[in-house]
Amino acid sequence: MPLPFLTADRGFDTEDDVALPFDDHDQWRRPYRPGPWRVGAAALALLLASFMLLATMIIAFAGGLPAAAVCFGLAAVVIVGALRMLRVGTWVSRHGLRRVGFFRTTTLAWAQSGGVRTVQQPVRWLGLPRTVQGQALVVVRKGGEQLPLLTDHNADFLSRVEAFDRAADTVEAWSAEYAVSS
Image (cartoon, one colour):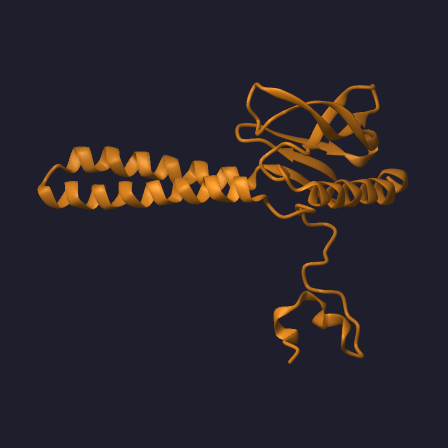
């Protein structure tokens, strides 16, 4: 029993082959799904925030409004941190590349890019100071500076080699399509 409503390929089974609604190349998009390490860490942070909000409610009902406000503020910081953690990654659009970090975002227009390639180099393991030998997808700026976009040992691709290869191929395809025409 096929269940076409559960698959993404249902748009290709019809006679009127129209582009899917999310197929707008002017919008910033992540060319891969967030990895299980990133999603798991964000889920744990949101679980912690829910307990903090429960504690806020208990403290507020007990009459400690200043302490409840502090607890609510800390829970809000944890929630914002978890949402930012889910946003971290490499985003692409017709306009260029965007590398979103936890504290900083770098945007590079396709015209400023000299190419995107996969290289073997020491990479940071889960963003920690420890480095291991791995693959990294880097964009080479026109001046020769390399900006790392993805690594096969970050929170999105640890133990997911096929996902890293697909994401690297997708970003390289975006670069091949838009870097030349810009």
